[in-house]
Image (cartoon, rainbow, N blue to C red):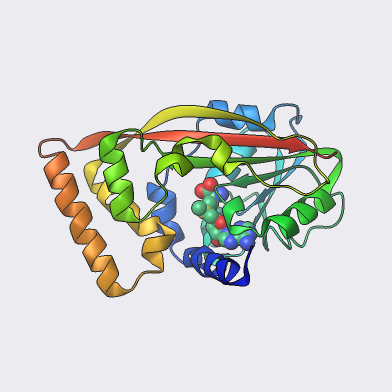
Length: 252
Ligand SMILES: C[S@@+](CC[C@H](N)C(=O)[O-])C[C@H]1O[C@@H](n2cnc3c(N)ncnc32)[C@H](O)[C@@H]1O
């Protein structure tokens, strides 16, 4: 990654530093089938490091499956929110490149919607370091399903990922170092029922919006409101379609 691109990634990644509340309320969770596929082969009671845990949307699914979870994120604000919802979960301020965990600490390392903020070469070395022998890593991304034309229009207004990058999971294949075996993958299609008012607010949780100027934000708010009024003049709730791309790999 060039230093300019990596600086721009850092700037957008840090856009989550505050704002855990809206994120937790508005962002989608993960379908059960996606979670089951990602943790397949990891027994209940195993240690899972959830990296880029944010407010704990994916962490909660891990806790519900009986894992001993350590939630890691660079944003203390996100982790505060996580601790309110999941008080029993250990948290640590850290990144995918430097988790702060000891060697051989985890049976599974997960990255839910966070690997794209991690510098992949450093992140895969760190992930391999903290995994126990025989351990695995798993990645997941929720993308709005922009095969639906109105969703594609909304994604463009939001300046969020659209086109092939959202619909084709192979465009999101994690690039790993030599420490890992082959990556396998699956895509799960589903939809989130939402109030239209919440859909209008969802953009406020996106990193582009969070790092935009007040003028840019006002413009995006106005465009979103105009679009949703025209698209859905007579409904209060909609179903927002998602494609969830999942990946996993074991240590070589
Ligand atoms: C889109 S949120 C995903 C949060 C949560 N995993 C979820 O699924 O809702 C991305 C998270 O990645 C975190 N992040 C940003 N840079 C990171 C890095 N270098 N390493 C790990 N996490 C990072 C952000 O603080 C944010 O909480």
